Amino acid sequence: MVSRMTEPAVLFVCLGNICRSPMAEGAFRAEAERAGLRVTCDSAGTADYHVGEPPDPRAVQTARAHGVEIGHLRGRQLVAEDFHRFSHVLVMDHANLANARAIVPADAPTRPILLLDLVKGREGAAVADPYYGGEENFEYTWDDVTRAARALVTALRQ
Ligand code: 4NP
Image (cartoon, rainbow, N blue to C red):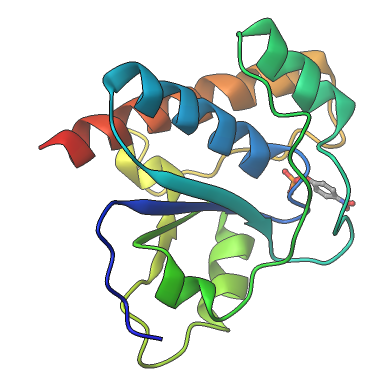
């Protein structure tokens, strides 16, 4: 597939696609809308554990508390074709990065990077997995993905 992208197409990637990446997708969509920026965005997991499932109820609740609806999203697994379809593939942690790199086609225009590489002072850091944590961990996730979403919107507007 030829990679002609008329507007930014951003894919957020975590392990299960039910906590961090749907929250990142929701936060980014909201920030882009607020900025009047036209974007395509989606999210995916490196694993297939939760394909077809809605986000974790704690992720939905946290996003909702911040005015963003993500309950309609459904899990899917990252595929090689995503590196042709998306201009940005942003992963949550180092395991996601290794798993994503393992399936990038040699001729694809897009390479995965850590989401927090976009945030000044957080380069090289991971968005911690809140799945085994409590409500506060989902708040930390929301904070991280929101900072990254704002940085990305700023970068895309330039
Ligand atoms: P996520 O969190 O990668 O942020 O969606 C997880 C969701 C599910 C599992 C692990 C992490 N799991 O092992 O099922």
